[in-house]
Length: 104
Image (cartoon, rainbow, N blue to C red; front, side, top):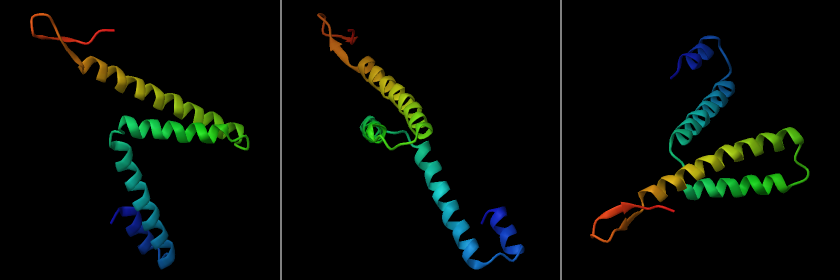
């Protein structure tokens, strides 16, 4: 149990309040673990598709659309980095039977 949760109990907070704190804290920890895990390229593309769908919704407030657009550009940059790395890892057989890095 974290120190803030202990403090809540010491302050005599209601059980329902403490339970809600526990739920939110567990949700926070899960999101931190998920963020720490490297996203696959497929997951990143799925995220970009979802962001695009939301951006196409004309009822989205401008501030939210801008934030979503910025997150999308950061995610797109990560996708490009992953693709660049994959291209570098592709090897071609050269004329001598050895391997060379893939070049465009």
